Length: 212
Image (tube, rainbow, N blue to C red):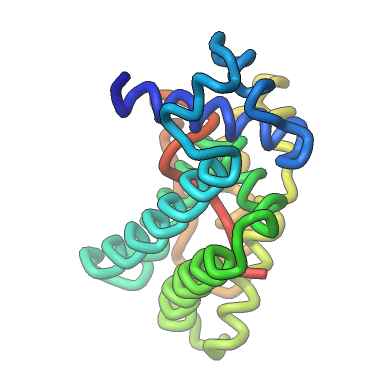
């Protein structure tokens, strides 16, 4: 079938890995969730390991590349930081399952793939830290990096699916958290709003991850 079919398989895999853990999901489980036999999935992927690779590697690269593009096209440091917040929140809300997989299942990649993800996401944090450092006279680069990592850690630890189930505006909640934390060191960022994404999905090309 088409690439759309592969994307659907990846989305379902992200959801199952997030709900049950990578080690507790087999190809038969994934096939049953999709409505096919487990062996039928080998037409698209060599196995469960390739599914995890295709969830984590492209998404981390895209997240880092988008951050660089935002900085390069922004008119000021504050505009760049606002754009980074919007993009990060959008990724988290659109792909909550993939965010969980990034946070908890990275260790199941090969050593070389783990290194690629960690290197990419260290670059992502560095992009953020350079912007924060540039707009906050009270922080040096190391402190800015620690601040950014702390914000990401808070977001990665939030029960996003539970917030969504209770009817909360998850995008606004995360935005408020990020801005409130950053505003303690960066003046002029608030007020900042992030429109909710048109569609919330569980897998695909995005995710939120910090280096370990």
